[in-house]
Length: 234
Image (cartoon, rainbow, N blue to C red; front, side, top):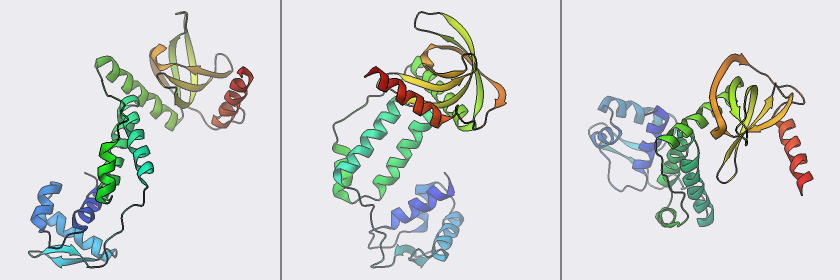
């Protein structure tokens, strides 16, 4: 567990308590040593968090200085829950895990009535991940990482008719179209923007080359080109 997450959970554990929380309980919950708990609490106190108590006695937040909950409306919270479910169902494992962790942190500091509302939403994105879907999620993670690092990719791609071609591309973004993902890219073979469906990529590898921002072939230019393309179809 990251130290930042541990400090967050210590504050959350102390919120709203009327009695002192023993360091041993915190250590057991967090899976760390007593010494680590003592050090973390001392650091929080030095940073201005109003924690009272000491080793062997327990800790509480000073009365009247409880940290206020995040201010979400019920509709805003439901949107977050539904969005997280969709990310978990359709994105790569990295984004799915990040979305779930973020929602747990948000729910941890919600007042009880909103926390209950978040568990009652009836909009679902069921997760059925067999081996093929797990492999596809790993591919989405791979493409996402290449986009972030601006790495040139070499791929063998099959078009709608099954015809294969080898491409070198500069990946710019991923888009989800309610059932299918597309990879927005600058295609070096065609010298233009192209969209590739990850499920039609037979092989995927990195060339070892990175690309930089170039006017006319970056993300802004791609988005502008797509707006013009779809506007022309209306």
